[in-house]
Image (tube, rainbow, N blue to C red; front, side):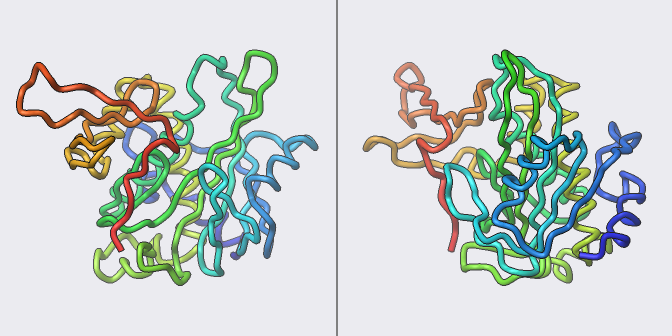
Length: 274
């Protein structure tokens, strides 16, 4: 990672970084720290925040030795991928679901990629996918103070130029096929797109509200309408609830006998194509 080049990429117009027109005035003040390796960018940034790092601080690492996904799952972080964390200060009350931060960051990055020619979708709750294969994921972790969500650390892992497993895909594999904007040709350009994308998702949710955000999330949500077996019965994905949970509906021929099912993160897995 060349920090001087990254700062130049961050000076691009938001439009050229895939930001939707509503937020073309976005000009964040970011303080970027690069590390050759760390255990976890989220953990590193959380320690920096405790020591006084301000909102807008970013940590990027070439490698993570203990990267984490949702529910403590290991996130493999080989060289060539993008591993970063961004500190925000939302100052929201605890009655707002912190799950929205994960949903918003995932949607924001996927939307920017779509605007740059990459057909990205979100896989509830926190994955970015291309044609059923995993491109990346978001992990948002909150620090509270009394009744407020005081600080939020939003982490992103994105496959760029690294090797990927059979169920994964990298941006490098898509560049020639999809012919996206040239900003996606370097790790620094991808980092700029990702940072603006995370902020885009956060501001979209905050300015539009829960329901309009959920509608936008569902518009690029994978597996909508697909059927799964739940407790021995067929149920199809119908979207996301206002609490951020996955919603399915039992697939009965009779409308009167259909039932809505709701799952919190970790209670139901949509799976991947291999």
